[in-house]
Image 1 (cartoon, helix red, strand yellow):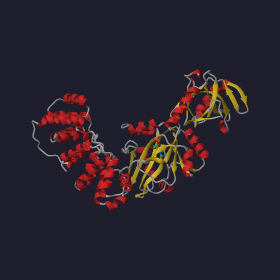
Image 2 (cartoon, rainbow, N blue to C red):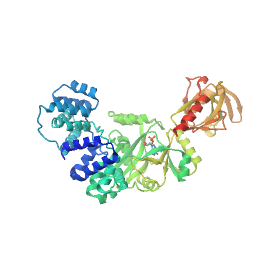
Image 3 (cartoon, rainbow, N blue to C red):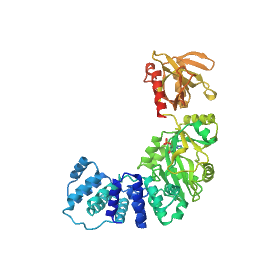
Image 4 (cartoon, helix red, strand yellow):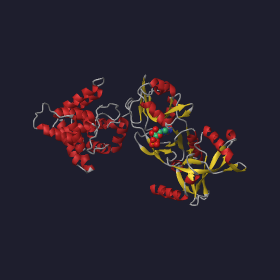
Length: 546
Ligand code: AMP
């Protein structure tokens, strides 16, 4: 296919607003285009240069593009920049500028779709000191052989911003339509291959094999994701569910085949070089050829650190070795996609879990299986106390669906929304915490400034904070009845919660669901705590959102 034909097709697509018409047009192209160009066409139409599983990057930003264009039209870079600033759309500016040049030029070569793709590969593979200049030279080559219309789409491709409205869904529909393949098969093949170009090609050349495609090691697939939900709802719908800690780290996908190992991020970028310690741990613990899914957390003095710590480590390009020593990176593995080279995503979670446990000697994330909301709630509080973000609830017979954010995985975590409340009392703790306060009674205020109790909080307070709180409150005890003490109310807690509920148990008329200590607000005065009026507002906002 000539690149000009590709550009003309893009222009046609850009003018179409009906999804059906776009599907028809694409399906028509898919049937007619030579096989060897189909994958590239599919990717390009979506503004993708390489398969979604590929870490390949063009390494080319707007600034280099302006430089290349300025050279081609014989103007200064500033001229291009001011044209872009006034027009906005880079594609159109390139088209117009090439149009002005066209009158004085003859084209030396007609671009083929394959030429453009090969140039992009060359640009992506260029490395070393002069790589930027070489990339600019490739862009100059392409732009100087481009007609104005080709220039428009070349520029957009180089910046990976096609903006012609071709999304994943339309391409899948078009593949289905062009080759008469049920949409579930196209969908499933896409999940496993993570490249619509290859899906389209297989649909055309080996339609009978499309249903049998498997996941390939070192081609990462999208990660399965979760929705917000509630424990009771999950248990009511599914009975027994699996509950795991929701680790506050960074998602990874680890691939191993023979001696080769690689680790990928949630965005499917390869992180093997920035996480050598994690790769090392996993490669020693994994006993089979696998693709496994997990979260890496940072541990300092035995406690999980916030996920920013993990991110900082991953972003770190230099001094990886000294970073390795400072903080320990710990993998927690919770799923398996490929086992002994075989794709296992369609097996129920319970089966995958067995395979997972038999494929690793360590690092498998613990889980409980329960149909008892109270047991799960206790697990949730323990998870928070241990420094996790919350818990994940997983449907036991569910497959692993790459890229899916459905109701098969539910995340339970406290709202980021917090409120400030006065501490009016506490109960003495139990066991090793008997000489400390275990749970704290919280109050908001009414319009007269009178305190009204609203909840208790015990979660989210680590041992160091508990002893700190004991020191603060021991001199504020007003009265004591059995295990209960009342305090002079001049300490404020900032408290997170999952939901505000109407309640007759507390004077405020409301209770907090899953209250969690966030921090001491020693900068605040009791007159500044949450008012009943504001709680009423929060309550109605919350129910409106539902
Ligand atoms: P969110 O990012 O809030 O949508 O929550 C989903 C994320 O939780 C996943 O992408 C993982 O990075 C993370 N996560 C932590 N622990 C688990 C777990 N046990 N199972 C699945 N995902 C987990």
